[in-house]
Length: 109
Image (cartoon, rainbow, N blue to C red; front, side, top):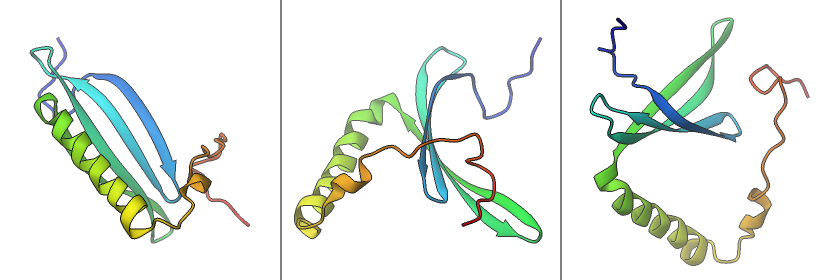
């Protein structure tokens, strides 16, 4: 029998968003009682000694908070786009970055 005492639960769905040196992961997981929650993880690659390490920050979002979270996030994004930076063209960020098999490797320009 598998020991599931750890914090990581079964992953049901995962979406990765690459954003420069950061990667965001949106993961749907299940509880022991077959309820679902979302984890949002920010992973940042940092140079340390002779290599790289990944610094991670995680948010756990439960179903009863989905609506409030989405509404607050949308309000904050709309405020930046419409009030603080109304003249800025955000469409340049709408295209998805091309993924390669070397995305996590060091890139030389």
